[in-house]
Image (cartoon, rainbow, N blue to C red):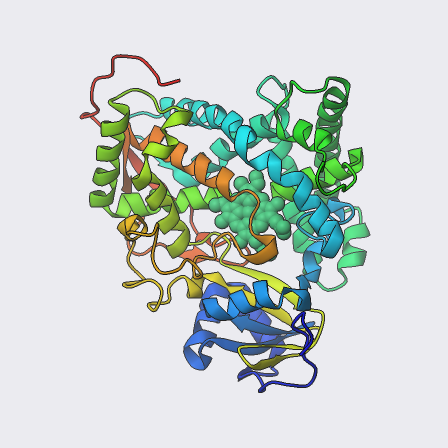
Length: 464
Ligand code: HEM
């Protein structure tokens, strides 16, 4: 075996179902999580199946995923589907591999950590307070639609700055356009289909044109005035890699990275919050424990960025949400060399799917895996086990760059909303899910709003 994990012609053959590619496509398309779940029940920690254009190896076991993502990462690159997305332009943090990917990560990481992160926190609290401030006691809302609106507002402020006149619709139309383009990508003759002047393709191009113009305007301002602006587009335009010597991003690279970040961040963030509210609404005792933490820390005043560190239970609610219902329930790689995982042969060209949902419900790592128990994250050591089985943010050299941002935003949204509101689920029975790309409730999340009447009276002051 070479030092980078490449191994030719060795390993046991993978167990699984060969052939029946079209049937697998049809069944998997209906509910991918359920399809993979059945494969796991039948074959165990790793299994193979065919799709019309590729052979897939599904990995269900956290240790085997770590082997692929860390020890043998040189044998894999990002899956091919996203690389063909025309709206991403050239290679981006999401689609690139090797040196181009390393360069992007070095330049992008500071925009999601440290001072930049603290700068976005006030924006999150303001947007959550405005949204929930407009709710009426006893009204019915679809929390999925509300979280979509909230996330768009936060993203618009974070991308362009709170002083910008860019409307959230510019981002939501571009996201619609990306969804449409991705749908075409998965169809036969996608190259031809994407060149046809279909109404939705024309609409998508117009939306991309508006987003491009908004990004260009902020890049121009950021390049003209050094220092003051702390929005994401400006931070990327001014990003420098002093230590590593990678070249700064060009204007078109900033544009492409903005699209990549939007694509990576939006649906995952919306649905992480949707699931958190679903779990709280289904488990009043957890909601009450969170209210107690909020009342003790905030004493009725609005949350502030500095409260983040004082809300461990809110954070545990979010981590447990990501464990039990990870919005990115699967992510893929393509083997670029023959190698093995868990001693099984993975020929070059195989698509490898990391089944996060299954790994995070493994009783070896998470006792009572199907129960929503935020308390497990408050155990000594900061969480269950050694942490290798928490894969909601991915792993290895492609670990989510926005994880700290997502956690900060979710904890502050939970604090702002749960301090004042309770939720009564309106759909009977277990929530139906869908999971082609993002794992989410199939029919939104309709809830009756109930204003809390026992919030402590505040002396009016917010913490700095
Ligand atoms: C709860 C919300 C989120 C979840 C569950 C999530 C999950 C993930 C996962 C699983 C990956 C790895 C995919 C892979 O290895 O193929 C990833 C990558 C990534 N995420 Fe997130 N993410 C979230 C929020 C965000 C946010 C808020 C941002 C940015 C503001 C972001 C930006 C990215 C980027 C740029 C990558 C690509 C990193 C790379 O390939 O080097 N994500 N995310």
